[in-house]
Length: 398
Ligand SMILES: Cc1ncc(COP(=O)(O)O)c(C=O)c1O
Image 1 (tube, rainbow, N blue to C red):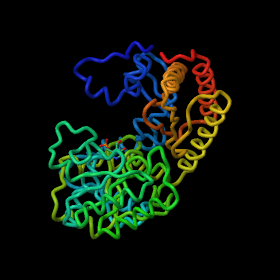
Image 2: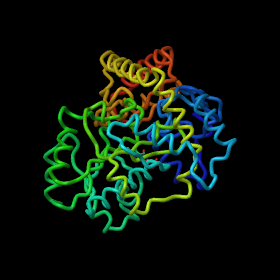
Image 3: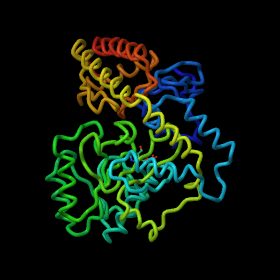
Image 4: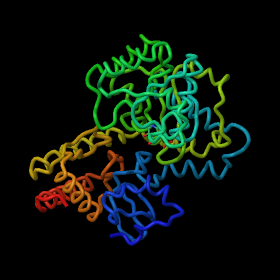
């Protein structure tokens, strides 16, 4: 057990959302990081972990990536908060329009919630409608909050959701709020992949009901490929939101898409003191440069594919009560819902973290391009031992 796996009251509220154990495995997961490099992080007790959480998907090239950090340091040395726009702003906006399909222009903000909330405000202003139909995790602001305390009822009443891979449930919602839906804002997928025709069906329904389609690619953007889910699944969005991997850990995000919608920026209020700071933009330009000029993204996909196949073999060999789900770049183990399977899940993750794998028990994982083939072999060997250990444990739920 990591000695540092204890927190003070002062940061408890934050830590709750950050600690991967999610109270599932008390005291096993490290809490305080000392440093990160490439595919690894070290905790303050000196334990080394192969990182598959990757700061919840912001890291794509590996921790402390030299070219990205050098670009950021160079921006720091020149000053990055200068009461004027910096060239990086224009360069990054242009770069996004080059790599994101159908993007005519882009708005640069900082966090994922900034981007999704901006997309919602633009959609409402453009359509003159109020209702948002959303799916997945889209951020923490009032319209997207996943817990209701603190959210005005009148805001919550303007937002609804629908079933993934279930076009009839979307159609029902669009009929219920007929003529009032500003946008369908959704993650393209989470741990279940889109069935053939699903995303295209969403597009058609959006068009039929005069709603905009916003793909929330905060997780999938710059991870599935430079063109994101639009390219991977052959669907066209009116707006996309990107963030996380686009700057390898630095805080920048964007709304990109149709120029006529983004021109509403002249009318709406979207503003922050920090939006013009160029430090993160310089890091993003360097990140996108590496992604565009090296096989990093192909490698992430290949590594993820091998990880998923290896885990399927582990399950077949050991009888671990779980399924491999998700995209290769964002894989996950879905354990069965029985008490026994959940006990085995706890044992599996206890074993893997003790052997130095930082795998999230309750959130899909991420794969970075910094992972070596030997790291992956090691990961699968640990997973195999963990699965054997979990399955061999007592039959009775704890
Ligand atoms: C798909 C998606 N959209 C939006 C967000 C919100 O981003 P942030 O936490 O940077 O505000 C997240 C964060 O995890 C996300 O995964």
